[in-house]
Image 1: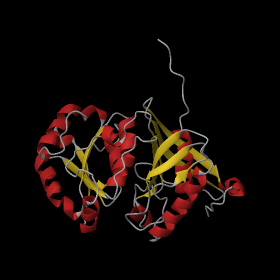
Image 2: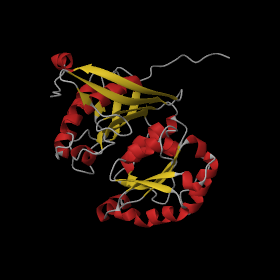
Image 3: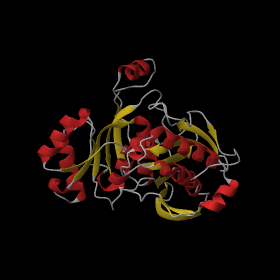
Image 4: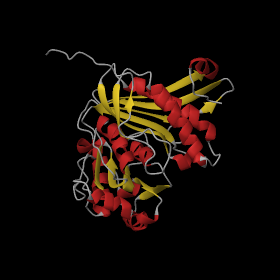
Length: 328
């Protein structure tokens, strides 16, 4: 059998952009200024992308939902001297988590071959169900909560009472939380951060077994890069929450009844994903040490299924000699 020629793992380049965003934004941890922290991350990430040999186009941009600083949809990224890729970005996933010093704020980037990433248009919210590879064939989006949890537990070789479900702590989820509790399963409630929730649901080393509920559509596409790479599953359907979102979607050809899976969101195995911790939690946060700093990142390549945890130590004095980004 003829071996395929290896291609460059651009996830190892993408992690430089998430590290830069984390280093820049973590200075705002707990200071109550989410726009300032987000702006610092956006500027650092944009500058880092300018040095990468890719021909990238932003499909999932940052800022539209929250009127935050933009790395806007359609923006070109990279030197154009590399592979053509669709890019999904969130320089700070969990701006409120960063602003109020809560865990699981992360900087995230996903990339896939040009034309293979789902474009959600004006959709901001989707209903999601995320599990690891072991339970990928055990779920149905519209099945009763108890049925899904029973089937997930069976696939994982556990009792329902052993499961931990990640749910965003929002009023729209109060009925869902009641249904989960009736099954006997345990719950972790989080104020924000459903990319981190999806990552935990597919990580066999995490205490989270499944993520349920309605969260961000852009975040769903971002998470799908990692989920597809690791063989997990996410079933989802657009679930508009506000009148203006419903009106905007009504003007498109997007089918609001269609159930999407991870292969619908990312239509290639040649997918890349990188995330760097900012505030701690699932990924350790940025630690400053005077003239230096350390970061912890997750890097995934879909083609090989390789997952790397990278601990980096940065000399900020040297970085600032050639970087326009100020980390202090």
